[in-house]
Amino acid sequence: VWHKKIEKQLTSGTSAGAFSAEQVQEKHEARLREIEQVKKRRAEREKELAQREEELDRAQREKVLQEAEELEQRDECFHTEQARTRSEIRLREGRAKPVDVLYDVLNDAAEEEEGEDAI
Image (cartoon, rainbow, N blue to C red; front, side, top):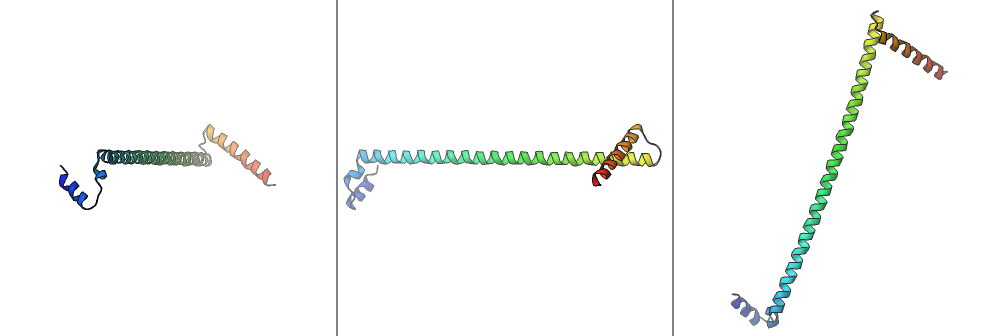
């Protein structure tokens, strides 16, 4: 099949040993080794990319969880402050509930402790 090419290379100075069966087999094996190396590098690269992607996903999940916790804390703080405000309004207007009286007593006790600590 490649007779003309081989003849041309022989006339240009290439040795006949370059076209021997052993030489052809050696080139074929070298190509196979190179293909295996490329496959290994590709597999390693894909593995590294998968690890990087997994780390990014993990970091994203942690960030979302942290934001959810912060939101929950702000929400809890807001509701607590609203409950205090409603309690103070009911106390001022004379329509206090038992829980409002308890809040007032605890709040007064906490203010007294702060006053003592400041002295």
